[in-house]
Image (cartoon, one colour):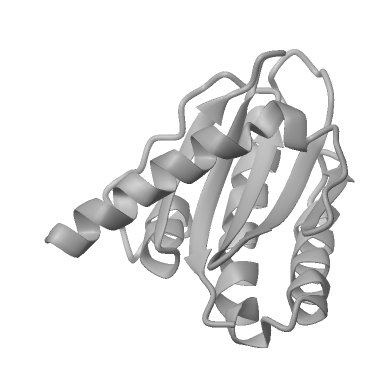
Length: 158
């Protein structure tokens, strides 16, 4: 239980230090940012960018879990945020904050992501459950210009 609390505290500290508004506009040496349109193809693009970025960073072992999580986050953004006043696009951000990898999906919706009790028979509703299961921790931060960044943190061994 103490480790869980420390992991959550680390997650919150890292996301506050990172500052998503700055990261979404500034290039950093260990950060990749990719704009994505509100369309189903964006999920595949996000998976491809995530996989190639992690391979480029020598973090092959994170690829499967991170691409699954990014698929869920982008799917949620495409499904729910596209009705948010039709402004902007989705932005995928991957950042290496040793010993972690932070991935985030920014969207124009101010709606708070709310986990649902997973229904394993239903076709949908398990997205945030999957994000929580496969990442060290996850959360969201509001953006200064409106919208939010939903993020997940992974521990990287390398």
